[in-house]
Length: 70
Image 1: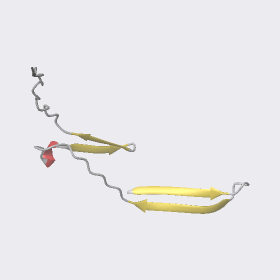
Image 2 (image 1 turned 90 degrees about the horizontal axis):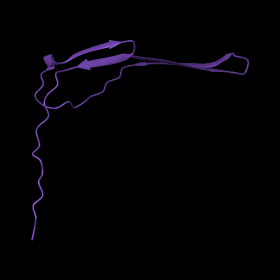
Image 3 (image 1 turned 30 degrees about the horizontal axis):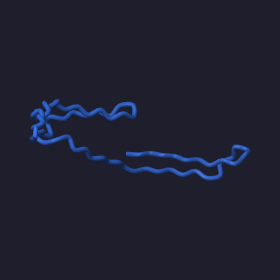
């Protein structure tokens, strides 16, 4: 959930307008293929979301070699 509050005050510090927002937020990330839901752990603490999942080895790319053209 998202809670946000905005206040607008005049030059004497008196509140003119106060707005409050409440709602939810979601975001999706692509992490690659070959993962299962149980591979992920997540925790939200002090306004920070930490997501952990196992690291996979990157695919090995063959080294490109130049070919001489005569």
